[in-house]
Image 1 (tube, rainbow, N blue to C red):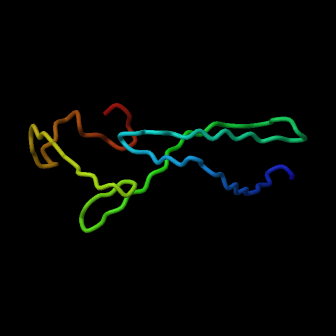
Image 2 (image 1 turned 60 degrees about the vertical axis):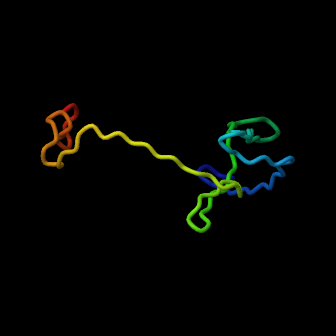
Image 3 (image 1 turned 45 degrees about the vertical axis):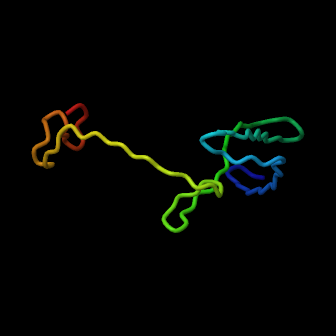
Length: 98
């Protein structure tokens, strides 16, 4: 390949045994990729990743085919219209630290 040339490579990898990520079992897989030229490594990286499936069925949230319930809590200390923001929250485009 010449300078500036690119190529795309797809590799199928079997995850055996496959274990999806979940809050109860936050498993991350590790993929190590090495680019070689004439048999010698010239670049590489390690990528950690998890696999999961989200979906909504009839208004319920499912993660990896298991129904989950979400609890949401929020605390609001003050409510004010945007035009009444304190000075420290206002900014001027293009000027740092305003």
